Length: 263
Image (cartoon, rainbow, N blue to C red; front, side, top):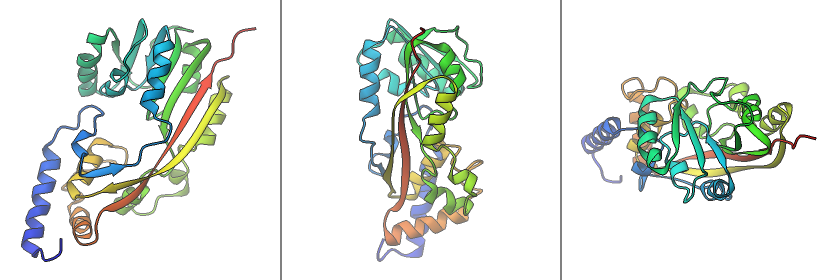
């Protein structure tokens, strides 16, 4: 901030970092960032489109549900609704949120096989899965069933990642390519009926927002702690205070794939 002394800037840095380091990062609710960071939303409106499909399904599975917040936002859930999650704090949070809605939460390691029988679901959804096990999705879908997912695209928020880690190799920058997702889905026997990528503007207005984000989205800067990256955080705080928000670009893609009807 113009006219701020070094002592005032340092005190503000310590206060913002301490606050962000202490707040809970359980679940997948980012409302703590309201007013502190903004992320442009994809044009397709995933939660609304997911809710529409859930309203027409008989048996649905939400893979890697996080704290269950997105699934719970749907006005109507199918008669059979199951969610999987691997992180214990999120399992507890999702259970408290989804059990009153009649949905079952299953603790699962996010590794094959999914703990369900063949052709168990006519709809499988997943928002921002860490890994998509296409063969397992194809196995648990009924013939004619659909997989509907919003996923993180390539080099998402890499301006922030590379600020802390330095330039990433091509294999990191090219990971999560939508066309690779298409190829993997088709290799598992699914027909991709929709695939839409978008690049979206993201802004961090204070260093606390950066700390919170990196604590919550743990794969961005693996092993992130405030103490480990304190010099970089202090320098970034000064940059934000003097030049304005730190700007990065989020990448997302929507993919919808259908299991063919049996002949």
